[in-house]
Length: 279
Ligand SMILES: C[S@@+](CC[C@H](N)C(=O)[O-])C[C@H]1O[C@@H](n2cnc3c(N)ncnc32)[C@H](O)[C@@H]1O
Image 1 (cartoon, rainbow, N blue to C red):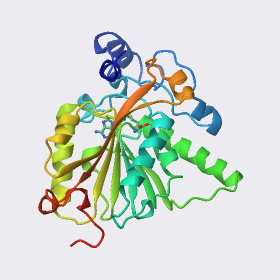
Image 2 (image 1 turned 60 degrees about the vertical axis):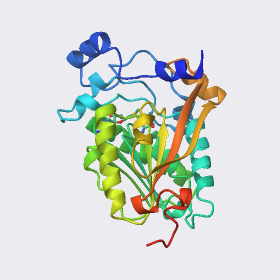
Image 3 (image 1 turned 90 degrees about the vertical axis):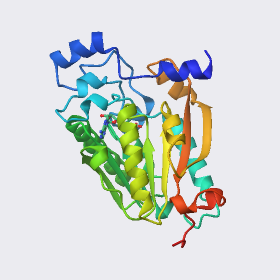
Image 4 (image 1 turned 180 degrees about the vertical axis):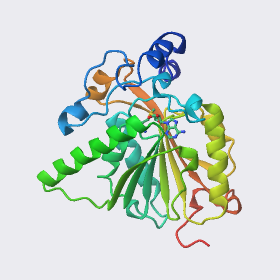
């Protein structure tokens, strides 16, 4: 299978006509709507529940953006850690470090990324999730995660760790440096709206807005966005355990890293835009 073919197999909106109708009629109970799956090793190791594929039709909340949801599926840990490492590398000579940043997971689902990010040196990690059932599971996972860390006497730099139940489009970005983690959470029209909003927000602040975009199906929208600077674009192989656990039978995925620069800082200055201390 070619890389591109693999990319497009990984749509998890689901066959609406079949699974979708059955699922949304049958139940709002999460989990009943998914095809049979094995428990991910991440969940077994940490005593949490972040696995599964849940089609968008089973995540309906009554919100006007339900129709734009892509459904739930969690990021492979090996891809997450690789992307964070590559993102950290981009900070070199920016004057910022990971500790200056808040990571916001846009559409955090059951919170796997929020938990993993809490150990990556960010001063704060926040997950935003539209579906209240998933947000509830994410909070339960965070409690289990925190108590395991306490038992193991692990300390972390992250002083704020939380899950917000709400629409990503209404979530106000913090004033300081922020990295937005985005695993293809919504459909094209919503991605476009969200990007417009980000550019608008970026215009009135000096702190950087970075994006880690996993499975970048709509990357051409990012590329067309004013001030959006592509820093990394990589197809990577999953770890063996992530590949074995992948419900799509795929053993790789793609991610891209961007930095939004204020309009006046783009162009000749390249990725040096948003240097610390720039007014
Ligand atoms: C593909 S999952 C990604 C989960 C998580 N970010 C990860 O990488 O493991 C996308 C999530 O986005 C959520 N979502 C979809 N539309 C949303 C919106 N408008 N606001 C907030 N969350 C949304 C879905 O409910 C789903 O849980």
